[in-house]
Structure formats: structure tokens, C-alpha cells
Length: 443
Image 1 (tube, one colour):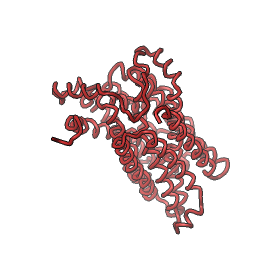
Image 2 (cartoon, helix red, strand yellow; image 1 turned 180 degrees about the vertical axis):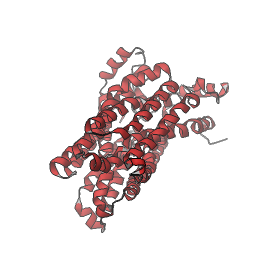
Image 3 (spheres, helix red, strand yellow; image 1 turned 30 degrees about the vertical axis):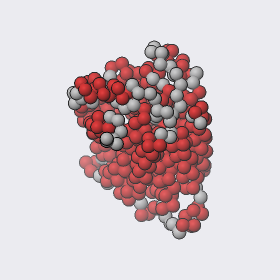
Image 4 (spheres, helix red, strand yellow; image 1 turned 120 degrees about the vertical axis):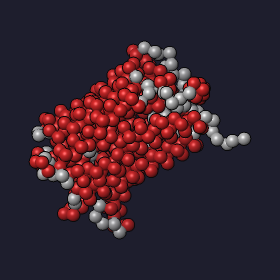
């Protein structure tokens, strides 16, 4: 008798067909979202932006993203993943290229806002789409593999952005202008490919046989993941208004939203400022290529942490501490980066102590993403699942606005990022507590 898990061959086939393609889409999306961090020194030098202006502009992406997230995901549910995700990619690719035309603070703010509007709905839309293909017990691993694209985007994008910045002066353009154009074009091309390559669901996949569709329907009909909190949930709420009313009454939704806020606060408070901080630590030896290579190291740690934590969570069936624990670890990374004695204790000089601490912080941030997204989909279904995932993502992503802006304001006010990182660490600690509170019913 085979020891292979039930439906293993079917899901291996689905993995190979869906995950690499979705992975590439998200690599491009995340790179266009955060490549502004590598443009920061050039924007400061050529346009005279202060830390506050850059931090606010970097975070402005999330203002547009949050405002349009829920309606975008509900439209996706109505018109289908293929058409709507293609629209999202085409529009964000065009806006990403238009970032090359930034010439003042107001145009910086406007284009970052429009980029958020364009990308809104992509991540929760993909998360929702994955629920059509995978039962709850398999989702942490799948979501972790898909969302590892964010850390891979940094791993690839950091040195790539450094190289593109070296085009400074070519054809009369600044290096940051070349970077925005050349990193925005792939989204346009991939958006066109979505119309042909991404099915709306199993019923539209020509590469599944009728027998495989029936087997998949049987697997999806199995009970929810016992390792995550369950309840009868708002299954009956098929209309949007009752579904949203049910979400508003569920404290788990708000606790998870706060936890995701803390995660995004830490993620973007770090990644939007990491190239600048590393450049300052390197001093006169800082070059775009060297900063890009060093900035790739924490992303590598994040990719490894995400896959290992997601797999271990699925293997053990445990979600609670696989989500809260990484938040605590990331909080520790931020705090340790502010401890000058750590570098002396380990005999490290230059940027190496900070780089180690930034890597710990990113391992925590990315490590929890797979287990985290199994939590809301474990007690929300139907329209409530589409709206609930988008609501958690929208509220949480306000942290992406607050984090970069907070660090920028603190830097202008104090000349240092210390108070900003200390505040982020405190919120991430509270985020871990919120996860424990949201999942306490079954423990």
C-alpha cells in the first residue's frame, strides 16, 4: 500500500500548473511596489526630497491600495480571476512605468497612490483563487510558496535595481527613471498573458480531466483544517451587506486585521528604508550595486523562513504559534538592531550587525505569511470569505502606509530611525498577542 497522502498526484499536477506562474506574477507585483526604496537616494539627490516626503510617498501606495481593496476583490469574484487579474496587472504596469515622470513631491504622491489603486485586489484575489483549488489542510504550504515571491522579488530585485541605477545619465535619464521603466514593463506583458494562461477555476482548466475535476471536488468537500479555529461562520450570507455585517460582529476578524497591520508596519517600515540605512552604514564605500547585494541578504532569509515555517505548520497541523511566534521574532530583530553593544559583543563592524538583525526581522515577517492566511479562510466562506480576506488585507495594509511615513518623520525630527524602529517593534509584539487572542477558542 502506498504511503502517499490522499490526492497527492492530483495536487502535484495542480502545483506545477498554477504555482510557478502565480509566483512570477507576484514577484513582478512586489518588485514594482518596493523598488522605490532603491530609488530613495536618487530622489533625494535629484529632486531634493526630505525623509518625510519620501516616507509619505512610499506609504501613499497603501492609501490607494486600502481604499480599493475590498471592492476590487468583490469584482474579481463576480467577473472571474482571469479577466480581473489581467486588468490589475496591465494598469499597475503602466503606472509603474509612469513613476519615471516624477518631478515634484505632489507627482510622487499621486503616482504612488495610483499604483496602489491599480494593484488593489491582486493579493486577496490570488488567495481567494487558491481556496478554489486547495483544501484548508494544504493552504499554509501553498500560500507560503506563493508568497515567497515577495522575498524572492527582493532577492532578485535588490541587485537588479542596483545595476539599473548605474544607467544614470544614459540617454539623458536618471538611473531611477531607467529602473522604474524597465521594472514596470514586465507587468504589462504578463498582464496580457493572464488572459490566456490563468483559468477562473477548476471547471475552466483544460488541463484537468473530468475525473480529476471530480477528485478535486471531493478533496475540497472535506472538513476544515482542525488546527485552526472554526465556527459555523457566515456561510448563509450570500449577499454582500449581510456578509459584511457578520464580519463586523466577529472579533477574530478585527484581531487578525490588527496582527496583519503590525506585520505590514514592520515589513514596509523596514524594506522601504533598508537600502538607505545600509548605504549610511557603508559610508563612502556605498555604491548602488553593493547596497543592492547587501539588501538581498535579508530577503534570502525571508524566503527560507517562509517555506520552512509554512511546511512545518502543515506537517504539524499547528497554526497559532506558527503565526504569533514569527511576529515575536521579528519584533526582537527590530529591537536588537538598535542595540549597539550587539555588534561589539560579536566583533562585527560596519553594516554586518544591522544586516543580521534585519535578516531576523524579515525571517519573522515572511515566515508567518503562510500560516496567517489559513486563519481567516478557516472560518469564513463564500462572499464572506472574499470580503473577509480583502478586509483583513485592507486594514492590515494601512500599516504599509504608517511604517515608512513614521520612520521618515522620526528621521527628520530626531536625525535617527531609532524611535521609529522601537515603535514598530512594540506593535509587532502586540500583533503576536492579537493572534493568540484570535485563536484562543480551541486552545
